Length: 140
Image (cartoon, rainbow, N blue to C red):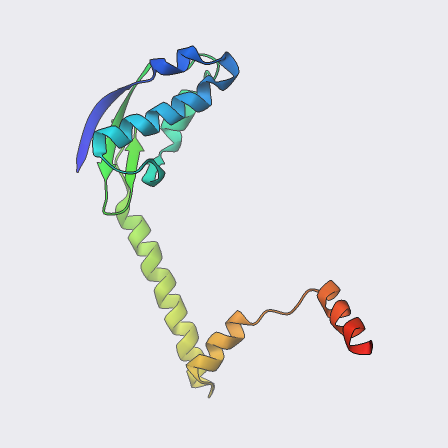
């Protein structure tokens, strides 16, 4: 769902000039949360909107016109003329999954089990200071 709304940020004028930029972003999140009835933690603000607010940090715009795009998980806040690029994110996820499958298949072709291949990925060498501690503990 997409809609274009104007969010009022005049509440930031009650704060000192050094905090107005941060408070304006908080008010923007609260306004979008109220408009969409979603938790403020799931709101993703586009860099263009962020730079618009922080361009004049001590005296940000009093009202901001934004496009709100809701997803199953997140709410995206964009400039009114910008479109959300969902396809690119999905293609990246699919490419990662394919690469992981190829790695596992490559390990199977070499004669290793998938479980062993996954264990090899997860096992990391210990840092040197921990190795020294282990050696000292073994000597005592």
